[in-house]
Length: 325
Image (cartoon, rainbow, N blue to C red; front, top):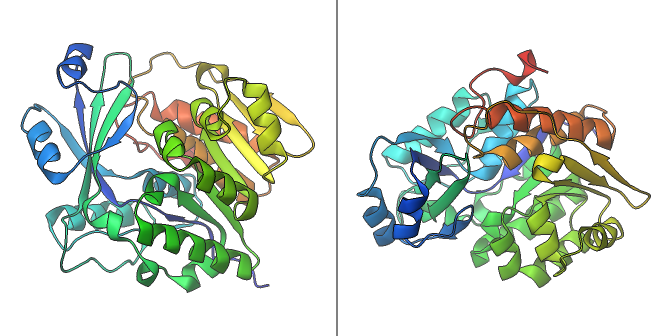
């Protein structure tokens, strides 16, 4: 097996984020569940968009944010995700390439417009996301770059993209490509509601196709339908080679078949916006893992990256993470 050309390639939703600060009353008026992500159609997206003021527009998408974080750390990252040949698609392409991420997926010339995620940030820094997937939901086998997957140490799959049937097929094919080349496969659980929708399939993924699992406490509890974190960690330890679970203010847990290790959270003076916290934890964890760190060391690096991004507005670091770590 030849040495990999890049650390990680991410496969996920290519989305432009629309970030706006709101109060809890706004969420109540729109009947939105605080702190969650929901899929909406184009009409719902337009209706909500018209109610916003003073928003910030920037490229996003969970796996794309993670790849941007890896590049910011000085690592090498690629991304596979589908946009349309429209203004937002051009914006996404420009931003991710400017971040130092290799991105060559051809934009679609027909079909839905580029996806967007309306991120509503409340004063406590919590984010509530309403996502119109648009073009990215049509990701298929044809969009996969087998050479990029085969020459990356880790292929990172975004759980959010498990909803569309064609994307499921592409995920399984990508995992097979990575393993066929002797590489690792990582999965982000993405959201507890996403896990609830696909619990059985996600359990099968974790047991049979994934080497490195990433998620938060709510997601891992949902995966195993339990309120007992210890029981969930025990189950995942016997199912997956390596798991990292973020626990909010309690830090993180790293799980292997041999042990569960807890890593305390870094103190953060001012939580501005939790958007991207999990994405940047994943960036630090995967970057460190591909550079020889132990699981505990990797989780500490992930914690530093998460602490940086929640101290600012937006899901991608404004400063080079390599200068801060």
